[in-house]
Image (tube, rainbow, N blue to C red; front, side, top):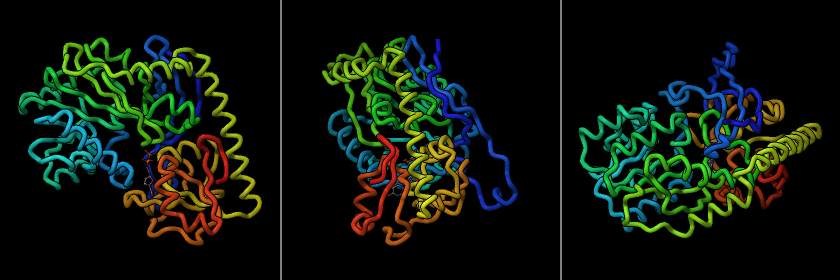
Length: 396
Ligand code: TYD
């Protein structure tokens, strides 16, 4: 049974940026009702009204993993670890985006799967074999018929975007070798609840996983988690190392039990923790609105930094529009010159560290706070303030 616990209202598709022409012509945006529920049996948390993959991951998809040094480093560190520890002869990435992970491997040893054709083209041009397809059984069969043994599959921030998780794991089991390893990483539900980062939920993030849920879900595919790592990326993620239950090459690391205990102690297996989260989210909205509206009333100019899907979700939920936040700065060429979905806030090209753009900056990319604060130390030194809603709405 799925029990609803949170309602974030009507939301636009979080990565559907509008062009100037769309704004002039008052183009109708697609909205959906963003509600979140818990599967009480397997503890999987998901959004309740989903959008088709074809609508979300098309040939205009703007997200590029390489836009952040933090992500580049995270992929590089992991690839070194994989080479040292698992020594795969052949590996594949599901959701290879612009190649930030696969570029760390020899071309003949790796290939990518990336359904957004505009993004797949980037790695194809770099010379990496990339299937511009959605991950499903028909692709798995095609890959198996063409390729040698796949010893390792990696997927970051992708499996949580695919509605049919049964198809995902069935297809993985079809291609991976007998003693192959699956490594997945996605935002962690525990971190999301602790940080009250409700913006982890939006149309692309169909699921926010916990170890509890992953463990329950993969059992039927004779898979098990043998190690887990906490990551700072994407606002707090978990990296799961998964193997077949018949593979005795790796022992179950004690970190698995520790993480499970932490999730249980927090209450992720009882519905009251979910209702408490809902209350916290509502408080967070009230406080953030208060901060932004008060600054605006006092004629303070507010801009945004990092035009993220998360920011679109928060601003739409809090009814904050382009009258309150004047524009966003962002480094991603495919977002620059466009308007954010829902709030219609303009995205300006970020060229250099801020000086006198504004005194107040809403941190859309709060998950890159460390990287951004380092870059903007002069702005901070001169008294510039950031506004964040994580873990609590406040001016820093
Ligand atoms: P991310 O948090 O990965 O986004 P989402 O919520 O959409 O998954 O994206 C970070 C965004 O912030 C991306 O558009 C690039 C931008 N950005 C900057 O403009 N400057 C920076 O210094 C950093 C780290 C990110």
